[in-house]
Image (cartoon, rainbow, N blue to C red; front, side, top):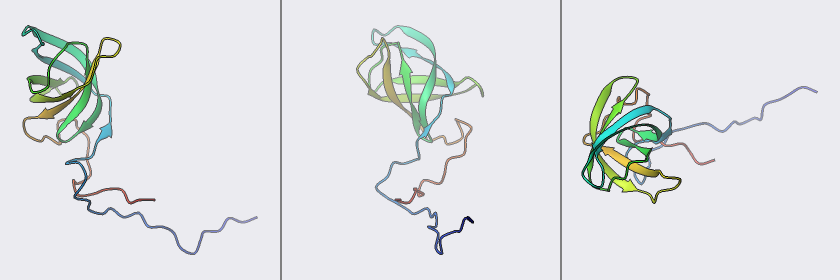
Length: 126
């Protein structure tokens, strides 16, 4: 039995969607070092990894308690680059760690050393 292709194949197109996030999120584990002040105002340094990255920041997991709105410094261990970030979201701790959203002071699409699609591209609905 020979395999045949359908007469028409669905084309993959990227289309603009203004209701989407500012940049595409990518599941990516990047080793980072986070420094700053904890909830009690004491200096801390913690080695961790990203959970999700984008051109504007990341989702990370920390054992050190921090609060939304504070500034921390994130260093990409592989490239040795570092940026100041603002904590924009902190989850309730689970197993001694909290997930948190961090935002770069300025967008930095090259910080994670991956190529992101343009901000106006989205995957078509299937």
